[in-house]
Image 1 (cartoon, rainbow, N blue to C red):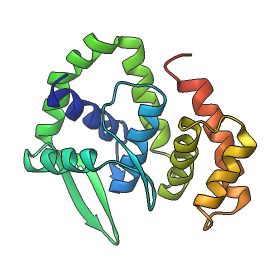
Image 2 (tube, rainbow, N blue to C red):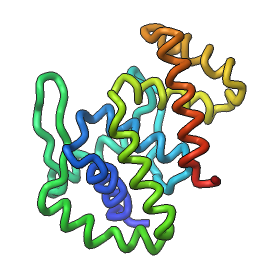
Image 3 (tube, helix red, strand yellow):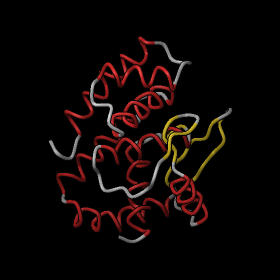
Image 4 (cartoon, rainbow, N blue to C red):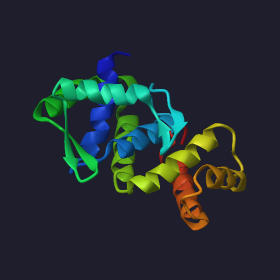
Length: 179
């Protein structure tokens, strides 16, 4: 797998959000959730202040900006991330490689997943990604999982966490590669 494959997958996530992605945090969580659902993404993530975070992904985003594939505009305290014209051409060109690697069905499912995730606020994705993080580390009982996230993220209410827990179940049922 080349770096172009990783850039293409990031470009797919950004492209799924037609108006752009509001913030690096949101993009980090979208890529992480897709990886946990077993889409072929290679970045390593650690639990950080706002949930799972990848230093690798941050570097890839920076390189994609330097290559004029992504544009990042400051908006208040956040950023809007969009594909540039070069980024769109890049995606059109390399998307067939990804399709060849993972198949049309899985590629389309991944695009739909990114589009669905783009509808959530960054704080909701922070909870969802953190739930997935603990789920992946062995918290398979949903009550234990919610307790672990409640301890790790005390700024969120039990209701917010349990509401996002339902979303995690839906994402697993609807988007897991194994389904």
